[in-house]
Image (tube, rainbow, N blue to C red; front, side, top):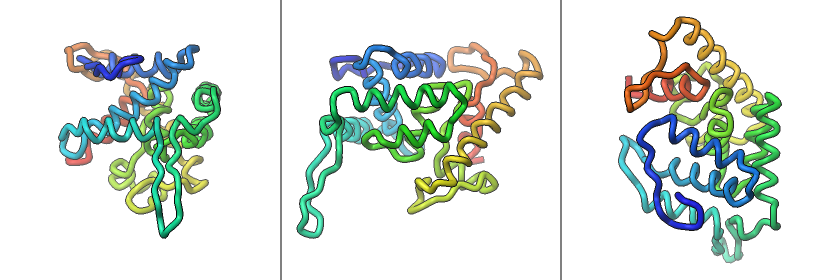
Length: 218
């Protein structure tokens, strides 16, 4: 989504998608950093199972992250927090703290920090981490975990839980992705990955993760 509007941006290539979000999330301008977070949230919900587009769901999730929502449970009024419930600068500070942690090689700590943002649990926090540093981090979700049980991540209700051990496992996971990317790049240009426009690129952690995810139906 574009800043200050509800106009939707299209991305002809994967690299353009990555760079768009990386630039926003690392921006020194508060509004752009927040836009990066909301855009990742939107695009992460935009495509559902089997590639089915769910634009209304994506917009609803993004709106909920901004506005929050009051609801009643067992007779008690409760609140889903949104950005409107944060103090000025608080959400941006979370993003920038996570950027600093990820840049320092503390990938699990960065994901834990990002989980403080509205509508972010472990998997979506790792999605932000992957866009913050595509060369260092990848997304971890239940699909990858179920197809790679040796990774050891704990699930709860079909989702990656916030168990303390999962943050340490994410650290190792990112290091593993980086190692695989390095090994592939040592094979030369013939082993590079192919983007949608026909351009080839050296492997990054996020590219290895995407290849793992693509194997889910293999």
